[in-house]
Image (cartoon, rainbow, N blue to C red; front, top):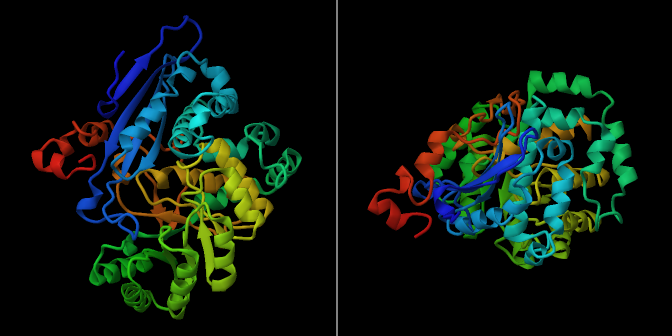
Length: 460
């Protein structure tokens, strides 16, 4: 079958009867025109169109369950991410569901170990994000078949089985399988009480919605004030384009929220090390809680130098860290105060389990990145597992929240008083609404169908 990545494509397999299998892998290039209102704008990405390279694993299971996953991008190049997902199709078609859901780690090892595809990484970049999309779709399928939301499936899992899902290659100098198993076993103590608390109170959130770089001071003030009224105790501002503008915006935000609300700032990798130190010190009179992505996410020693120089302002990074090995080094070097996992950047749930365990071993709080289409929906599950069955705490831990695009999902996030409420529907909360696929498919969806939209669209 000839496929066109931008039009929603599938390939199918003829499989023996009697055993439920993956029968088709369907991909979609989904793009939202967020650049029109400057939603998501920052110093490095002034005009993002939030996008998803979206994959659905079709099956012939009698229960009708499917697996949904995606990689997040910001527009042009999303078709490349779709193509990378399609390159993994041979590993999926015909795969028996019982074996796949009983041991997702077996597929993860096959994907990261493919000798030819591995050359395109290894375990980094577009190919690794494609593996993450597929693995997240598998976990979505497994949770649906278990009739559990993913966070609960992970929290209730046998510690030995959960440890078996983790690839410990290259990280045993920081975390051994025995240490991980011991941590997971200890995490079971008191889990039932924490589940009750999660349902009653939820998991703390912070919001970036007031702080996009393209917003006016008036819009910043209004949204920051509304955030505090909605129960958020932390907001975040994008910085890094112009120091005078950043000082004014920080002053405006601090005036709007008062001294009792944390204000994090995010440079989105804009600076060299010396610039990051100088800029962060200039902002320090307004009490920034953390400086996020102050320099290249690959620069472990640079982060360590910045952290030493700007304390007590904390250093946070992670949304663009490419794999568990770099996270290991950031922790070993004492380079970060806050670790920010991303549900769709690394190799999916399996690798994020390794990263959560590394953070717990080094006693560094995890505050996930979740700005972007669907990222809030996914990463809430990982943080809730971490709280219930690993670290047992939400102290100094918050999940990022942005207030747009949730309506495109069948199981959107629910917030109350600045807290994420735990999902109750089975799965990973990754499934998009069918009408979203019709409207925002690029370039043929109704959103992109007009000549003006096509000319100014993400793929232009």
